[in-house]
Length: 448
Ligand SMILES: Nc1ncnc2c1ncn2[C@@H]1O[C@H](COP(=O)(O)OP(=O)(O)OP(=O)(O)O)[C@@H](O)[C@H]1O
Image (cartoon, protein in one colour):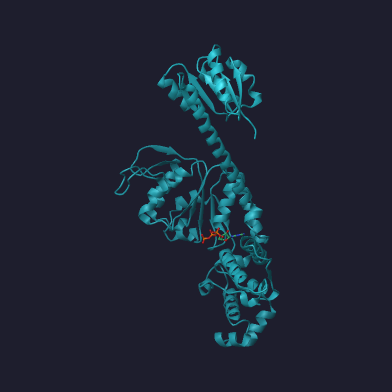
């Protein structure tokens, strides 16, 4: 393990020796002593892990030395040791950013010992958080998290790259399970705010009466039940990204409050008066057509324009062609790893069945379907019969999207063909249409 390098800046030779001797009792510590501020400054290239500063040095005061060190090293923790117990100076130094302020007396060396232990603990926690953030960033790097190579998805990647380069708000639309939250996380963890928090809030999941305090926080006693101060999600995400999922579910009253927060770029907790300035990126998501919601008077137009930023529309899985199989293999790999089983393959018939299905629940449904198939298949091979469709909303899907009547017709026939396991005669009978119509559509590639 590397030693922990401590600079002790102290002009009193006796005290210098006391501190240096005491700290050297810890074999992890490498203690280097300095008599003046200047000596310390000229040795900063040795990269100390911590510096203790005597407040009244012969060549400069403790706060001057502190500022001079900060210019060179933005991070090194510093402890000020003063012979006077001056609360004002202590508070001033702490506000400036010193890690601790100690008064010289018979207990100082023990206080210093404990203070350094505490600082080291904080440093190692910070390091851990940094490492975890890096790992998260990698986890959400585009290639590793958003699987697929279809042109439709590549368009999304291009927009995400643009969004990452700037701080623009992002509004994501797409059917359920298309990966809206995944895209939001990938933008955050690949952008300049990745070291700060990503806070997701689902507007549809929070009871109406709680949303305001959930988003903006409240002070103690702001309303019945507000037993303590609560920091809102906006404040929590300050410096980072807030992800407002299902934004269309926000009622008009709260839309006005949100608009005010966005215009003022500050938040005031419910029942409070303290103004908290906000520096935040907002990513919103909805499966609804927000423009249509504006047209119908359900969503404020001014808020819509504030939030729209860079719009990203996630295509449904059925428009991503071969991505279905790429994702299937990706999910199978995950399944194998998680369950420590032998590699699982997929038969041509099963692959075709997956390709022909419309997946109303999109990627989430595909994953559930693949996981289930992996569990029930025999001999590590997924057959057509192992693919069970789980969605209960297939019929509803027919009227979704901007499609022509002809396209809707194809979807309906395709659905019945799948349900009847490719039996054209039964499908024709169910729908009361001629079997030749179906054969012709098959020949023309409209259905399969
Ligand atoms: N391109 C993709 N590659 C890998 N996994 C994906 C992809 N898209 C989505 N997923 C996975 O599918 C699931 C659903 O994704 P996500 O929650 O981001 O969708 P959503 O659009 O936000 O859904 P909803 O609107 O229902 O909240 C998650 O498990 C996610 O990891």
